[in-house]
Image (cartoon, rainbow, N blue to C red):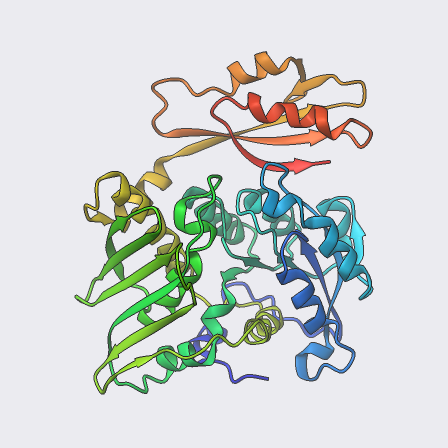
Length: 402
């Protein structure tokens, strides 16, 4: 096993959840089989020759999930579910039916929009959760997941596997270059219209930046073009960190550290195992290895970069976007299709035209947004349910039960 970073050791001493486990076996369930991370984690956790803590942890169950308006999600969920069944993983029809059979959750859905709704029942059932990137579909939902975790006294953390690459962890915990004066980080930065710009893929490079800089960013300015992005963050101590998002040419992951002693590359990507090691320690201790403040800053940085883009690169404070997210309230509708083809909205019979009117925001609703969960009865046709995608009004699609 990898040595626990000093910051994590400190957190272990001051756990606010107290959920450390002494069980000899710990069963894990996956939510969302629509990413290549799923078979990668199953191979690590279910390896019969695994050593150390991996002997205790096994992935035994999964729920497919999937968002039908995102091909990167919908087109992969069945293939990866089939792959992991060969490792003894049982596929459940719902999160709720899976929860009694597991002790902890790996929330893997590649689409961030359903993460809040996927996490909610697990947190209410007191199941600790690792959430793969992005933590949520927007900043408000990231804050709400943390609020639910505190309310239910159940730990949660989110990270990219890049964070735990050895070179980046050395910069963070050992300072081999002396004081870190600044970092330039980069990653692929494909955009997805269903997500804030950097949430979909730029989050890798932004997390690389924060891993080595630490928290404390106060403002962001962004320069954007079709093929490139550069977001510059100012830290409260005067340091400057830069993220370059790449959509053309070679698009590796990496970073350069500006230290007291010299300027040096941060090292190579080490794959999924270092993150999986930390996930084991997380479930073992019941303590999140990353402080809520830092994760919140990462998503506030990316949201502030979006606002800066609309203001032609003007500097935007993280506090501005955080305050806007705190003030924004949301209402969640449930739109359901039964086997006879009848639609209901929150249990009341409706038509799609009527539903659209209900889910269209009033013109003065600056601090409100609507969300919709789409439910399809098992024998109702998927094609009919998909007609609803054009009838959501202003509501954001956040979950599909089928």
